[in-house]
Image: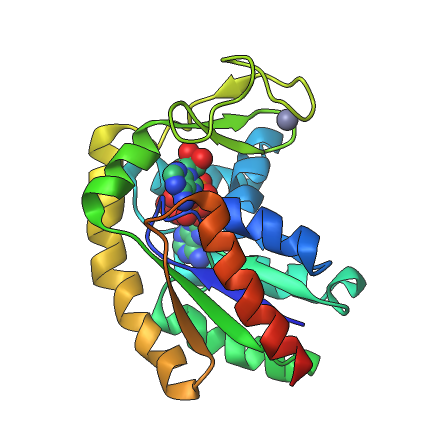
Length: 218
Ligand code: ADP
Ligand code: ADP
Ligand code: ZN
């Protein structure tokens, strides 16, 4: 099964993706994580991406599309992937169709997680991430057992540099302008499914899981 998860920044894409990937044995591919790793490693792609990410802007399509084409071409993707945070523009969605065509891959479903803006602000400004394994927490809604330490690996938790109030507001503007209009592309293909993300993490997950189990039976 090949899936995509989308929604505004802070909707819970990464949180749900982690659970979905585990439940359905899929490879979780997050373009945000790929760029953050590239920045950490100091690669050329990382340097270019950082300029845009720090401002809350999108990394240019041609860079992102190359990164995704490369990643999806690797053999570990054949048995099932969950794309998280890509595509984010209509151009990316169209380019992805070409990549999939070349690779003979078909996507089964697009999971959209919908959350109102006030809640997104609360979620993003309280988000904490493990420096070591990337697990995401929230200081109020999904706290780690020890305030600054990852439950899974003992790594240090940090706040993403783009999770400040001003950058978050800019990312929400960018979402509305550049990403929201792309959803119609998948609605027209008939593989788009909307989920109310303004509920408990587990409630949202159970809903998505039930939908995917039905989808798998078909
Ligand atoms: P995205 O990948 O869409 O940006 P994340 O999965 O990183 O979103 O979640 C954003 C923040 O909100 C994180 O701090 C996460 O722990 C928290 N969060 C995720 N889902 C929920 C939920 N259903 N209810 C409350 N907080 C949530
Ligand atoms: P969020 O969890 O808030 O949705 P991500 O971790 O997915 O954020 O992405 C962080 C940043 O990385 C984005 O604000 C953007 O600058 C860049 N990025 C990630 N995916 C893409 C993409 N598909 N196209 C352009 N930029 C991207
Ligand atoms: Zn960790």
